[in-house]
Length: 310
Image (cartoon, rainbow, N blue to C red):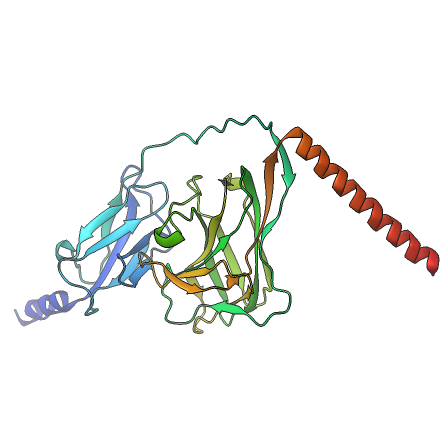
């Protein structure tokens, strides 16, 4: 009787919500789901097996709060804190329903389908500007920057950022691409409609990290926002990722954890750089090719002159 009473006390006193996220149709685990109390800075991300640990002991959490589960390609799920089931030393299965499949928007243009290289974003050229994640950033925390882009349909091809410092063995990050249609121009609607996570691993000795965006068919029509989201920290060292930033003053934003609100961080921009292809008319494409040819000819001539001078 005493043993049963003791077990009951452990269950009743438990404040850690442990669960496993599953697809409601296939029963397959759902990795990297954002989990948290909306706008309260309390959140986490499920791991590659769909498992999560969520601390309910914070004084910020009340019975009227709800935990939001959200992931690309699935319906968002809200569970009131008062309805949470805590099971001692076990994981509770949480099922998420796939969202209805939507066809991608068909774009009709009278400019023709000519795409030219048009790289956009920002680089650091020796300025001592940086943005960083410290131990106050939980899983699901994001560091974002607005990218100014010429109006017109463009496909994003490659994303690049520079690492100044990373004491962790390695980090797993997710690249998110948003419309700037949130409150006061903050990140809003996701532009990644592929249904696949854009993941990248940052090792301790990485300096310049490049992420191939081509497989995800991400198109934008104007300015947009790119963010890096923390999904997992490998090793036993504290988080201390430092990324280069730049003087451009279009602004950067931060989210401290999953489901937290976006806050304006600085008028500096993270040095996020995007290789892209812009759709133009045939005439514009021809002018572009002519400029490229002339620049190549000029460079070749300069090299020839230097060799001749030797």
